[in-house]
Amino acid sequence: MSDLLRRLRGRGWRMTSQRRVVAEVLDGDHVHLTADEVHARAAERLPEISRATVYNTLGELVTLREVTEVSTDGRAKRYDPNAHHPHQHLVCSSCGTIRDVHPTGDPLAALPTEERFGFTVSEAEVTYRGLCPTCA
Image (cartoon, rainbow, N blue to C red; front, side, top):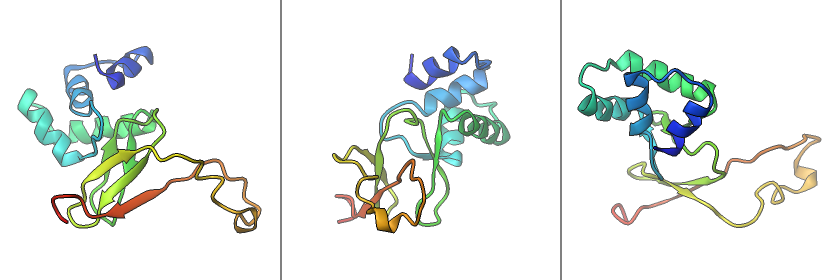
C-alpha cells in the first residue's frame, strides 16, 4: 500500500474506487502530475472516472494537506503527494520537469534578520531552476 493511501486510511477517508485510483496514480517519488495527467492515468485503470471526479478528489486531497499544489512559471498546477516529507523542487526551465530535492542547511536561516521586516517566518519554499539532461 502506498504512503498516501496509508495516510488517507488512517484519517478515515472514505475510499471509493475513484478516490483509490487517484491516490494510486499519485503514488511515488518525483510525482508532480497535472490534473489532466492524473485523469489520463486514472482512466487507464478505471475508464469510467470523470474529469470532474479527479479535480474534486485532488481538491479534497489539497484541503486535507495530503497533497500539495505546485505551480511553476505559470504552467498548470501540479500535485505533489510528498506533502509530509520536507523537500524543495528542481525545475527544468525548458520542459517543466520537476524533481524533489533535499538540500542540506536550513533555508529559514538563510534569510537575515534585517530582511524579515518583523515577520515571524515559519517556512520557506525554495525552487531551483535549470535545464534537465534532456533539454541541456
